[in-house]
Image 1 (cartoon, rainbow, N blue to C red):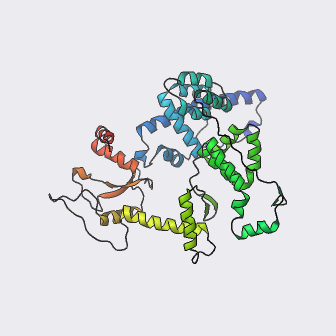
Image 2 (cartoon, rainbow, N blue to C red):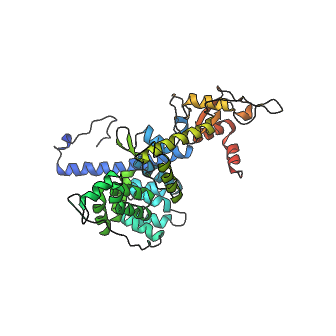
Image 3 (tube, one colour):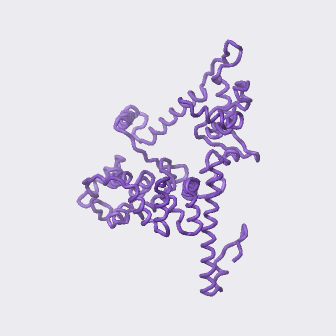
Length: 406
């Protein structure tokens, strides 16, 4: 079959007239081409990542380049990037993917376990293996200690929406006190924590969410039947990324699940008491929202000098040059102008806009006589700040400075 053109509409209707033999032959050719194309894509991902070419296109990371620039899913981008980095060290990974001897999910799982000593043997034994086979292979090459034995109470069976042996009045009272969800699902949440430790943070959080959403019995049954790897892979596929983020529930409403220590819990309870006149129902979300507002205000004050009453102007050294630190009034104006986001733009004018590890950047470097002025200072994410430093001073010099002990 000829290669599909960009934008060509794909439909099953055109396949209905094909004979069984032609359908199979065409499918085999397409799968083979897909293997080769996947290997090529991974090779390109690896080279773009190695050269950090995503930076000049106003993306702060290779992950953002793939997900935002090329609309890959988070899971697919993660798999391709990790596989590409492994292939840069061990090129045979690409050869195996191109031949259809190793699928991308298997390469993704193998990547962190490959070393100069074991990669030949590990890749040889992973050839044409299923995910379960590869998981067993990884366990052989990189064994983990036995899981700690534990005994826990199982949730009581429910009948008609109530726990067996429980009373409707007690359930209604729990709901009225706002504690029904936590008391009814305490066992499932304990299971989620145990699974998080056994399966890894990314997968454990995803399974934990499903447990809290009432899917605990089905998952528990599959785990007890030895289907743990499939459950873990399914959870990882659903989560895509670590779950340290707010999950949308409805327009303008999000769910945030976090784990805190004993001291933080005591602090939270003390706050509930102190704020009980202003927040009579002791709603934790209201307390968290207030705490976030105060922390944001304090952090902006420290980092960007965003204060209600600005003071002072730029200081100078004895030689007349401005001091190394950027004056507060300049930081404040630059932060407000750039909206707290990286202002780097590529040749086409696309702005990075990342808020991660944002720093102040001199367009004309301070070391080359650049001044602390609003026109000369812009916000940059750390990746683009370092990228422009390499353009200004050369990669070798910047690399040497990074190697100096802090």
